[in-house]
Length: 97
Image (cartoon, rainbow, N blue to C red; front, top):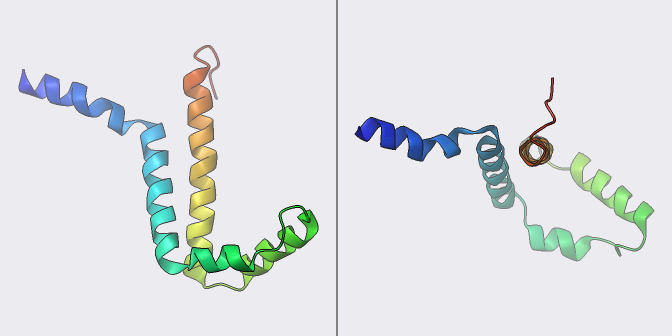
């Protein structure tokens, strides 16, 4: 009976949404270890100038190491995956193919 209780307790942590959260948390943690985030925000232009902001993020992404680029892409994919899973969980009648 202990196995049944264990499986019942662990089942929510083995879902796709949990996998997306773990991937996002791990990639953001490792990204924070590689990049001095406060300095990026200090160097960032005003948020009202969208063109300058887009150029800044493009230059910041292209002028970093491969590890930072990989972690950024992983964090973006994890966020898209998490949004997809949350949408799927909130709309029970909709099935993705």
